[in-house]
Image (tube, rainbow, N blue to C red):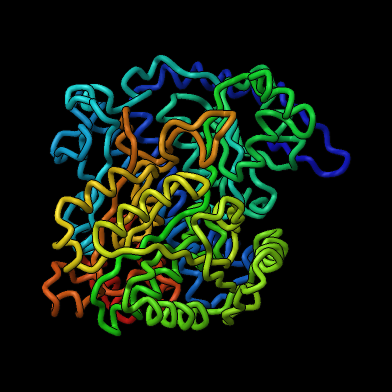
Length: 573
């Protein structure tokens, strides 16, 4: 069944929900081994259709076929979905054999009475392909190791207890998000799912239906297209028991509260229009804290490219794009870094501001900031310097630009004094809690000692990267992805709940990533234990498309014989 909303079409939500309700009953009786086999079928179909997926994605985003930026569509598209299916099927396999999900995973302590589960590197191939990168999932304070082990598996611990029919309102910017959210609802929450595509992704409807055909045939998943009215009709259908969405805070509030006077009255009365469980991932204003230190010219260039990547990946249309760089006004190399950042923004490959409304958001940012700099590269790339973190009315701290606009704010101090002040500013002044980034020289890390890990614990963000863009957390299947816990429907900010989380962990608070400060071979020459070259997600990586395609094929079928070509491509980046 295909539900669409072209002119003259008739919506039949009752039939759709009835089909998925019948599928829910079948799902409750489906053994874990069979559920795992379905994941493997989805993974194989994603691999078989990966090239077509990327071709359509590049057309939507107006990318030339030969552009290195097409690599973003490989890594944030089929690569992400295939890697997640691989990791999730491993969890199902362990549960199906009566094993413990976390057997063999390192569990240590994190500040504040938290536990930390080491999820990256996971196997030998991670140690080779992401050498020097690490990731941990941190629990909420006070969670015991016994609780952690007992909760791992979520809905798959009691597969017969299903959760009804969920509606997923799909994202329109990163094209693996809708299928990943479908799998999380089906496996973590044990619900059958209808995915309502964002109209931007309608050209991918056929690819997605082909990938999910094993689940569609069983009545476990359906994928529909249409506008806002279709989404509203389904969200409010009595047969839909839960809703998950990825998008903006404004769209979330329109779904939950309505608009205008209706929304204001509902919030005042604490009576949402949508009276069912609602989870979400909504983005925000993400900080990039640059801790002062003694950097070489090469360090300045590389980290400027790193920051430019955090802003310009996908033309800046990422919910976890770095938006506010926090610098020390006392850093002797502050001006050198800003000069390198301007060059990096200007030199990054040109690409269109493809997401709807991007031009208007850029114009608004420039209108509100008369000193805004058009830094070149593309007409939309904008740098806002001199932002005042004490200015309660500064719009750059509360408005997610969702485009190539980067702001810079300064605070006094060096070392731990600066880091603590920057963490406080990120927590208290910036809207949203999805992702935060810290860039810090290895010598400064040594000087800070345990103060750095304490600062990470103090940051109230769902994913935190230290010398690694938080976007890597999105691509790490065993990582959790979502806002810092504690938001409410009335003040949702970056959302409620998590997704991805292929280990199906309970009681989680955040994911923490670390990476090398320098790429190889400079990392080796300076004593860092990393042989990773420039990462393929950098916007300046010249072989990103080839490397992304090779990594996707490897993730679908890991094998030693594929590694030389991947390494050769990566080293040319």
